[in-house]
Length: 66
Image (tube, helix red, strand yellow):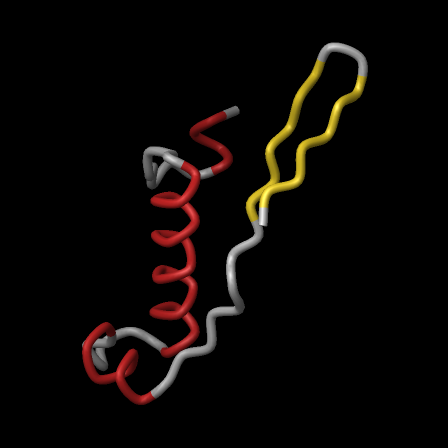
């Protein structure tokens, strides 16, 4: 679903993604068992959001950015 907002001279496009619920397929194919499950889930959601938004992934910490 795309929602277009207009505020002054700013236009924002909002794309709503479906809920991401890990299932047995996800754990079998995207989790190596070495990291905690929440870390694998967070990594997968981060990669999906990056791909959908066209953003480049970065491993910089907040301290590195500041």
